[in-house]
Structure formats: structure tokens, C-alpha cells
Length: 444
Image (cartoon, rainbow, N blue to C red; front, side, top):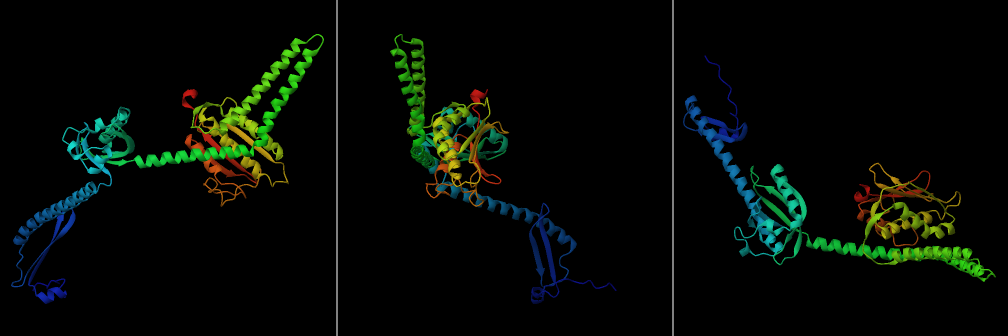
């Protein structure tokens, strides 16, 4: 007698309730992935699902698996198309469908609004993105096409389009290809006009604030400036008196008088140079970047703050590396940065009474061959909780002041593609330092 085979699921609630006599459950598999199951039952007879019938059902099951997977993929495709259509119709960003030859096949209203065209202008062949692109952006577009063909996508980048009225509009553009040929694709276009206007307004505000801070600094340096001007003027007076004395002799000493006049001219030039530097700091003008030797700017700045150093009993040490490469900077703005760092160092040492008040200014080149300038004091130092906030606008550790000096300094340095930072010294004091890139034209 054949042993009775144990049948699973006999105690299943559904099977007990339906009293099915024959049950068949086949997995629906496509590419080793379970798509679903085919479940059949017969309540009239047992052993209905013979091997022959199961073979036929297995064939049907494989076809059903393919059909179900295709239906799922088609549904996913419809959902993706619906999402894309909602994105296009939402007009949140400009969307353009085109090819690498320059044709615009389709575009949404947001893009048409960006470039100032209407739906009627979008007749096939009439509007081309290559003709909307100014000549100075063509090389960048060629590089973008090569990137699209190589990678299938183009990373977002800034460029400009011509509007219908001939004006230019700044945009951010990213793109992706449709197929393996990578001849057609979709581009996403964001209008940057408002952002550019905000950036321009911010730059104007920073320029105005920097000018206010320069005027404030000049007020603080009044004594130093007066001293720098009075010295050559006093020398002019003395040399003029000497010249008169040489000429008043019974036999005028013309050679000595000539030397006195030459000294008068030199002293006049010195006074004029001080006045020129002060006027430049006080003048409200745009950025004018020119190749400069940073050591020359440091020396000019020291002359303006010398009186402050003396009155606060601060000894200055300079270690300026010779033959540094030129940097492309705005002289006035760089002077403003150095003056601010020096004045901060002087103020940090006001309460120092147990050690000499020393300020060190160094220049050189760092590992990346950028020009490096540092200002080191032996003052109260930088606390850990304030280290990250020193360059924030309106943050100050002083009892007076706006808290804008270091923030403006960092903005100036970064506008020159440089970096400004501060570190605490051990056991006391702090070092403020900045780097600026070398002017490529003069360095070559």
C-alpha cells in the first residue's frame, strides 16, 4: 500500500470552507523575478490537474507573466509621461525639446515667456535655440553638445539667450538626451534675471557699506594722516628758510640753494602722495583691478597707521618676502583690508600690560603659490565660541563698533578670488591672514 502523502494547507481556513478537491498554484516568473501567481481550484473532482494539463497551464502562465510585466511597464510609462506633462504644463521652469542641430521641436509657455516669443512663433523650423544664443556663448554650447553626446546629460550651467526684442536674458540650463543616439533631448531653463538683479543690488550695497567703513576708518586715522602730512610740510618750511638763507648771503650759495629747492620738491611730492592715498580711500568709485606688488600696498598702509601704532605703544615688525609675483587687485580695497586687520590687532592689545605689544606683518607665497599676507598680534586672542562668527555681519566683541569690518574684508578678498581667515595663537594673540591668486598675465 502506497504511503499517504502529507498535503499542506489542509487546515487552511479558506480551503476548509470552500472544500476544494483540486488546487493548482503556479508562479508567474519573468527573468527570474516573481510577477504574480496563477491560482486554480476545482470543487467537483480530485486529481483534475494532470501533468499534461499542468504543462499547458505552465505555458499559459509564462505568457501571462510577460503580459503582466508589459502592462506594468506601460502603466509606469504612462505615469512618467503624466508627471512630465504636469511638469511641462505647470510652467515652473522653461522646458525645451530640441536636437543638437539647433531645432526647437517643442517648448512650454514658461520658456516662450523667458525669450519673449509666442506659441505662433514656434512653427517647426522658425525658432532655433542656436539663433537665440549670442555669439560669445557658442563655444560653451559646443562643449555642452559634446558633453551630451558623451554622457547623455549636461550639467546645469549659466548662459544667455536673445529675447525677441533683442535684449539678453541670463538663464541656467541643464539637459538630458532622449535615446542612445543622443541627437535629441530635453533642456530645463531657469530665468536668472531676478537673481542677477538681487546680486547687483547686493554688490552695490556692499560697495556703499565698504565706502562708509573707509570713511569711518579715515576718521579714526585722522591723527596719523595729519602727522604724515605735517612732516613733509614742516620739512618744506625748513628747507625754504634754508634756501632763503643761502640766497641772502653776500655771495649767494646757489648750489646749496638748489639742493634746498630739490628737497622742497621731494617733500612736496611726499605730502601730495599722502593726500592722494587719503583721497583714494575717501573716494566712492567702482572696483579697478590692476597688477600690483602686495608689498608696496603693505608699505603704503603702514604709513597711514604709523601714528596709531605709536600712540598705542605698539611695535611693528615686518617680514616681506622679496620679488613676489604681481596680484590683480583694487589698490584701495586691498588697503582697506590691511588697515582693518592692523587696527583690529592694535585694539586687541589695548588691555595688554604684562608683555610688549607687538604686531607682525608678513608676506610670502603658500603651497599653492598664491600670495599670502598675515597680521599677527599678541592680544587677547580668539575664543573658541567666537572663532566661527568673527566674519559674520554685525558680530563684534568690541564695546563699540558695527561689527561689519571683518565681514566687509572677507567680501573684498573673496571678490578677488581669495580667502581670508583667522587662527588663535598659543599662548595668546591671533593671526588674521589672506591669500590672493597670482596675476596670470604678469606671472607668465
